[in-house]
Length: 170
Image (tube, rainbow, N blue to C red; front, side):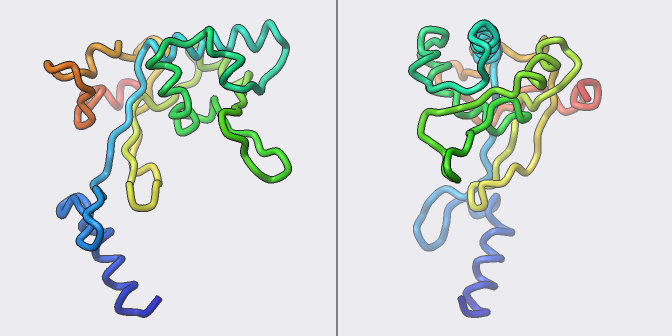
C-alpha cells in the first residue's frame, strides 16, 4: 500500500463516526452498538445447566436448539464477544461453523453474581475491534422489550444502561 493510500485509510478510520459511510464503497463504517438482553442470558443459563448435566463444555448448535428461542438462537454467536464465557474452539487450527465452547468456571462465577460481562459493546466496524463496553452483573440485564423502538425494531443506538450507572456496575 502506498503512503498516500495508507494516509487516506487512516483518515477515513479516524473520521468514521462523522462521515458514517465509506467514501469508496458506501458501506456503513460508523461504530455499532451490540447489546445482550435478559432472555439471551436466561438461555445461556439453560445451556450451562445442560452442559453440566452432560459433563461437557463444547457443543454444536443443533445439540442445544431445544434450549433456545428463535431470537436467542439467532443471537447466540454474539456471546463470543461478551466476557469470555462462550468461545469458538479450534480443531486442527480452525474453527468450525456452529461449534462453540462454554468456559464453565467463568459461567459459574457469572451466574453466581461474582463476575461481570459486558451488557453492551461498541464495535469499530472497520477493524471489528471492541471500542467500549458496559459491564453488568447477571441480575442487571434488561429485557429484550426495553431495547426495542415503538415500531418494534431493535434500537441499535440506545444506551442499555445510562452512563451514570456504569461506575455503579463496575
